Image (tube, rainbow, N blue to C red; front, side, top):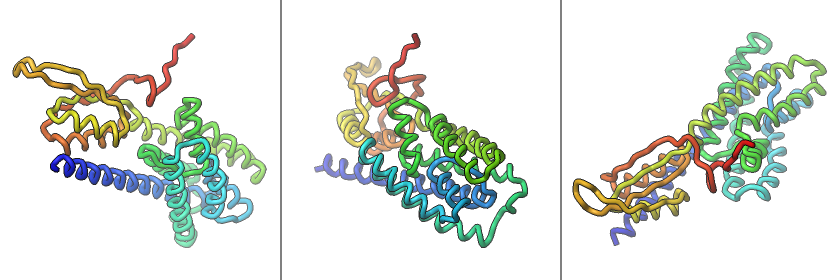
Length: 301
């Protein structure tokens, strides 16, 4: 009976972690939307992604970005449903809904009460907007979220071509930025757009890479079976059990070894703490982990 109660308690804790992830996804999208509506749109700065396409439609045809972002994402979500996981698609639908609502709510506010003067200190506005947007998008990716649109293509590049998020952003966004010449008929917006992309992709990579690092856990606990089951079934990471012996106590012990992404560390540590607060845990960074669930092993020719 106690074991069932413990498992139920752990499930509740993991659900709370999911709620926490959603909170950070919302915060990331809010940062992105704030930078977009307060600093990017007023100065007609060109950017990439679905939001960049929406911005071009707004500059050229005055179509509200919140509406066009929804239209673009309908197509992208259909692509995601066939090529990516169901979980990613669900997260994308949630992300698209939130970003459309935030942009739709913030844009009229900053049009009525602007915090920047269009045309003045344009590069400073670009810098602030790109840092906010990049950090927000990085926060969303770090918690397995998506803002939809070309983020889906970026995730596909990362999944199938092993291209990091920043470089995938640069590739796709450069194509969108270059198309702005059709509207403005000059090179200056393209230069600002490239500057935006470089800054925002660097910030995004900086935030994401902190969570994509691989960790190794060595766990010693009398409740190792419960811990292994929960990590395997809820965190969806493999667990290796190695028999050992405590030299001081001369007692046989079983040691767990787990390899996981850094963003999964909190869930693993929370699970261990709930099951056995007295467990001994060693957590270390790995220079590289290759194989199923991690990076593809590559050998230079």
